[in-house]
Length: 215
Image (cartoon, rainbow, N blue to C red; front, side):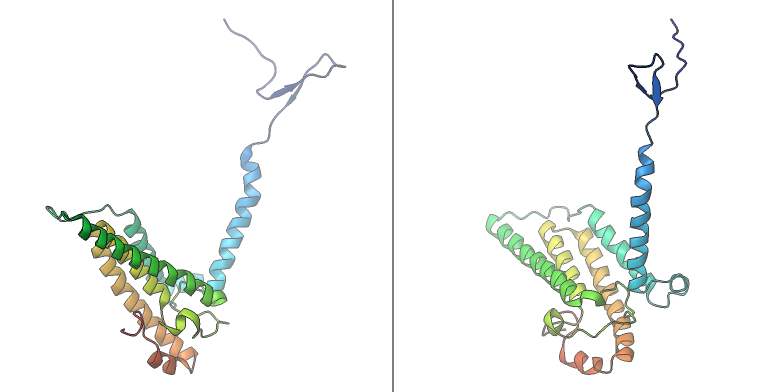
């Protein structure tokens, strides 16, 4: 059996004073998403511009853009990387296992504190690039009075905490790569900071790079 319908698919409204129904077509939901998507895109572009990202910088890697890409790739890989433990590695002692978990929790919590405090103290000077922002200031107080690169320190501590908690060899390898990357990125960043801020040389001698009081 076939049914012919002279009205296209839509919402049919009945008008009591008329014998002909009115067909109202609903607007696609995508139309309502366009303004919010456009706003989100402009907001993202503004943040990237404030951080110092430019098209020329991406082409020439003039401000360490490729280091940021490598950092993002390593951090993403660390998160999605499956846990791999050495065959036969199993902690038999419950007390030893609790001690390991406690140490891992301390590392992770300390790393989280470092990251949050660094973001707060850095404020408007924040940029993922090793190149300092144009109108930035040299921050030497708060967590930056304890270590020169607390964001890097926090990420390293958090990565080591998760690695120890899982006792994962795969995450240990990525953690080692992160340490090497942050060492390279910090050195390049400090070269630019020394040129930009006359006080950075004295600050560099007074405050350790990644580990408070040690390194």
